[in-house]
Length: 162
Image 1 (tube, rainbow, N blue to C red):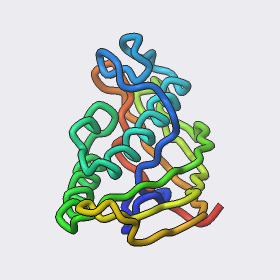
Image 2: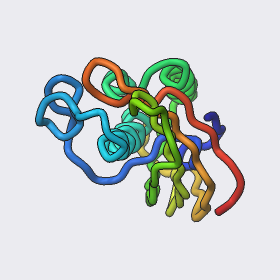
Image 3: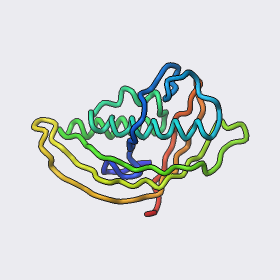
Image 4: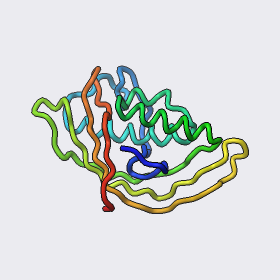
């Protein structure tokens, strides 16, 4: 999933949630069970950390919730934004559901209608708001893969309006 403006469905979004815990578990309680519900939990944590990465221009924590090829795409985009001397703040409202997956639940496909309430670009030097974009909803399909005791997002696609 790629997008030129953070805060759209193809960009990481955040919903309030706990910080990443030990063994890559977003809930802090050890390895996640290999279930579709655990994949949803990991997806929400990815969205929260994605939002933080764009606000701080720091992707160092994303490897706990994302993997290549999506991780590299986001890292390059955040670096490009950092070089421009700006950062983004946005908030997405999530409504994910399991669309399907492999028989052993090692891969879970999540479908979400992501609604961006607001997306704002700021100068990293002055902190002044430079631009604003409000309200939009897009379908978002995420591929969650179970690795090292947790689910990580590996691919994402933004679709039509929802």
